[in-house]
Length: 102
Image (cartoon, rainbow, N blue to C red; front, side, top):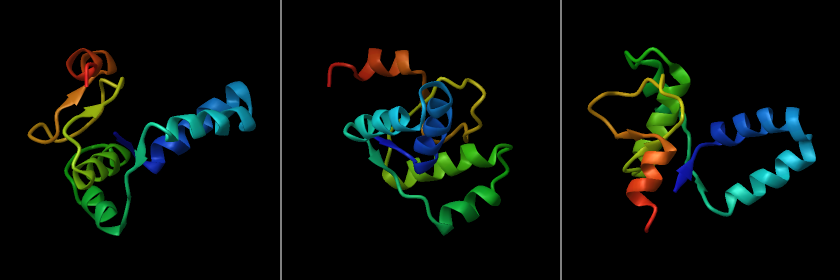
């Protein structure tokens, strides 16, 4: 299972507002035990910038998922903008229902 450095940054930003920096980092260390950080590089930035999709951050996440070989993208955000013919997108509930017995 992967997430991007953007995911860690977004989680840190949100969590530190609620629990403070030290507790936010502690939570991220716990998360890191269960996920790998997908790489983000210059080629992915170029692809995202040249995509016809309307959300640059979503496309960075998508490009990292493609390069990491992900089979599904899990998100609660129903407004995510990913290519319709690309990696399937699932809610956390649907993902756990489908893959929870692995």
